[in-house]
Length: 165
Image (cartoon, rainbow, N blue to C red):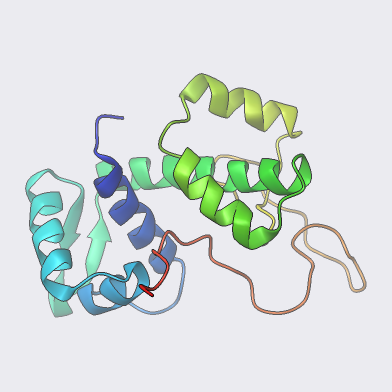
């Protein structure tokens, strides 16, 4: 993967937002990543030039095949790292998310695969989101308290920056 960490973050954020039923537009991306609209506009221009995204009618941002491949890789790494950080190291979900965001850019494909194997090829992250490239999660049964069956809203595994203090 020959992209900058920033481009990986943008692609990952677009991927995460695309998992909802709302169109991905620059304003949503700016809010999600806690960045200014001009920063998003400039990044989108660059990503269009480099073939990672297309901006369709009504300014909807769509990943190209090239962008989608990178975004899936980043989501897979992020979610595997979250699983390892919570299940093996015992970090809470919030801390695991922040740490996974820092580590996801440095993970090699070899370590990524070994991590998946060591974790037993998990199908979801601790938040219940599917891990790209893994077997589909089993549907949760009523009363099931396994991973991903916890009540409440699920975190989308986003890459948004924490709000400025």
